[in-house]
Length: 102
View 1 (cartoon, rainbow, N blue to C red):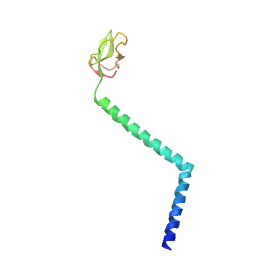
View 2: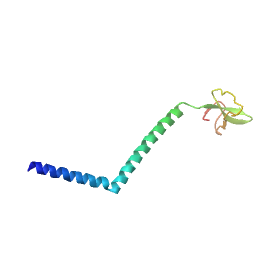
View 3: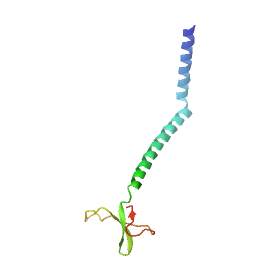
View 4: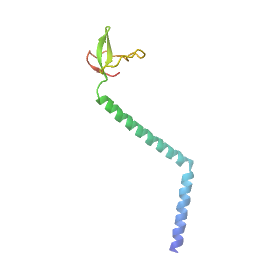
C-alpha cells in the first residue's frame, strides 16, 4: 500500500511540474527573471568600471590655448599627421592645471 501511495504521489508531482513548465505565463516570468539578472550583472560591472575610471583621476589637464581652456592629454602623445590630437574644451568653472577628462 505504501508503495502505491509513493508511486501515485510521484506521478502527481511529475504531472504538476510538466503543467507548470508548459504554462506560458511561467515561461514569460522566467525569461523576465533571466533578463533582469543579466541586466543587474551588466549594471554592476558598469558601475565598478566607472568607479575605477573616476578614482583614477583625470586623463588630461586644462591648458590655455588661443585664449580657450582646452583639455590636453597629460601623457605626451606622438604627433600623427593623419590624426590630430583630440582636444575638448574644459568646463567654464575650471582653471588652468585642473584635471579633466578627454
